[in-house]
Image (cartoon, rainbow, N blue to C red; front, side):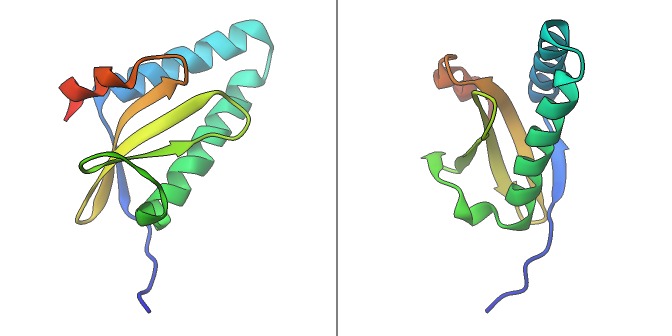
Length: 102
């Protein structure tokens, strides 16, 4: 049985921009909601960095996490000592956009 270790987290620029924009949108709807959104995204990313193989494969080497309270998926790729966050996608967006983000 292997020892779980948290992998380093790397955000691609597009994923970081999506994350920030979504946070701004939530904050514009209700004060404090951006903090809740960010906490949920952080919780999911922490789970992925601790045990990425527990999450389903989207295609090839890209996995995803479904958030609980917010309608988002986080797409990521695992590297030997890191996870790379490729996208923070609203569930209504077309994940085909990820093709350009490998």
